[in-house]
Image 1 (tube, helix red, strand yellow):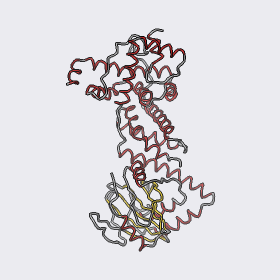
Image 2: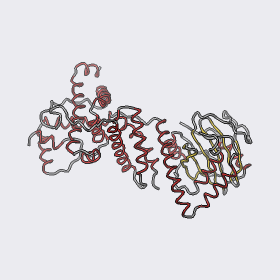
Image 3: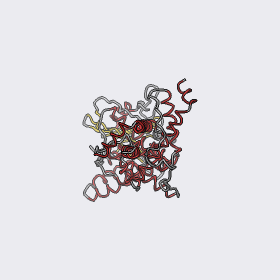
Image 4: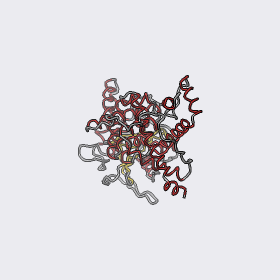
Length: 184
Length: 271
């Protein structure tokens, strides 16, 4: 038996809400976005779609609706694509890697909490790409198609966002006070 | 191969890639180069941490309800179009039956479901209309009691365990739309009869006490008044239990439905 649109979206609603909240960084706007995207998707929905395909398809509509809504209010999250020099490509100039704490340690938990709070600091476009590429694990080529960007632009944004979090985490880990208190 | 080339080829480190000659060469470089292997290892760890630490925010119940109500309205709009098409293809008898029923039952109850008032059908009429509409309705869910409860949690935000009624078996669970409000219906079959048990979340909407026949108080800590109505072959019982409007509709006679309704009017499991 085919699952209805309501059944399919009901299963993914928490994840879609998390995505909407990550994109907009505002609870009210996230709810508006999700509702508008769901209504659009409802009208475009054709039965027979499996849960995995539905999720990817629905996410695409959420992203498109997000970009449309943002552009409607004069903001384009993908308009500016300039990062600090040296943070555009994974080249050989990066700082030496800092060993990350083992999962299950207090330092690891602290790092997770820090990362959780670091998301809002990212550029809106980079954050969008990071969610799609790193959290949803959608390939760069597909993300590029969803966002109407070149694959290289997606890769660059993904790298910049990831490096920003990685650098911040490394700095945090090298601070004596952090290490001292985390292991205490 | 230079470090920068190897890193560009192998990043992101958690991605699967086709192992062509270039990738093989980059991997060989990374194995020999401590900086590159540390870079890639850290990238893998960061990727794991990002996925692990991503801000998760479950959809609030109010959003869920608002969204599904909006979807129900959209669906009702589509359904009315589909019904027109079906009527054109020779299913007019359903419409005729519904109209006859509506005419007979109009004004029989003073209990209104939600945005009630003049111009809207009474509770009994609305339930009877829905019962008939589902004769040609195709969307439903069949499963165990647990699966049905999960279905209602997902769709309505309310865990409705199908009440167990001796001699009747659960046939299916459905989401219905009554006066623009979404609700759940559990259909039962048994003893040559079909029963539909309704649960409509109405929140804090004011209660208008039914003026029809009261069939008594339910034992225990739940005390409800049940209103009964007979509608040419269909019997309808309605009652209110906290934030939920209930109804039992079936092709039984009123006396039989009176007894059955008492069994249904017990607290449903909710979370």
